[in-house]
Image (cartoon, rainbow, N blue to C red):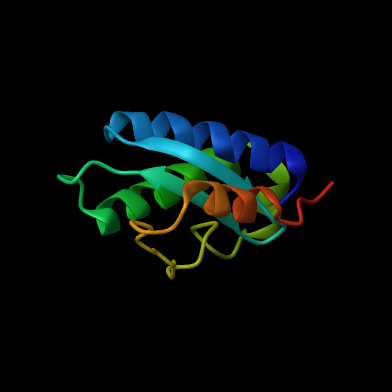
Length: 107
């Protein structure tokens, strides 16, 4: 992923999270993955939210950036099926934000 792709991914994440009644507190990406710090309502099932975020970002990014379609033409999706979901109830938000902001963003 390039910097413009990551910027667009961040926009899509924000828009999609709002529809779920959630908020993206921070997000950033590297060439091969994205980190997002989300504030999620208790009524939202995290696995459903993550699945929807991955589906929507994959579909939109692949349609808006033809290079992704070429790179992933044999795969119907952009992301792998795995994900890491961590509850951050006790961690200071500034520490989490700093970690996400310090990703090795591609050019």
